[in-house]
Length: 172
Image (cartoon, rainbow, N blue to C red):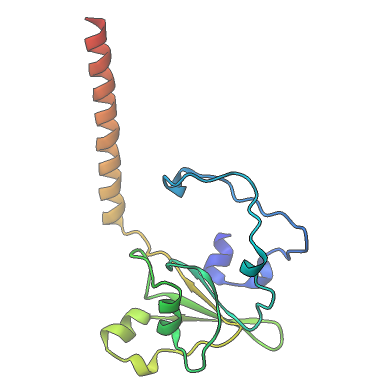
């Protein structure tokens, strides 16, 4: 999966067929929302039948989805239509993937942050039918990892101190 996310080469993904089953394992990173482990069968009106003429939006956006293209829509318009980007979105490395007529894919990396900072909205790339937009997560810096690690360490220490204190008080 990492290779696909970094290259966006659709040819490395397995081809899905009718009645294939996709299993997404539960992880602690899924948050505190209670989820059913049963299969979800969406109502027919939620199913997309013709996806070739849609724009796919995935990654760190509010609502990853398939969007109807509107003539003259640029990347920013589509991201707004997809519910905006999350706070951890990397706006400097947005991937635009287009399928070419020969079946190959062309990937373009767009620095949307620079367009916005320069107030250069007229040059933001346009997005058309059949294209895919992937907004990756910001890469974690060393300082962030060190800070996050120290917070996790302190939490673990507090749990240990609490447990030892409880054991000490119970033994008295």
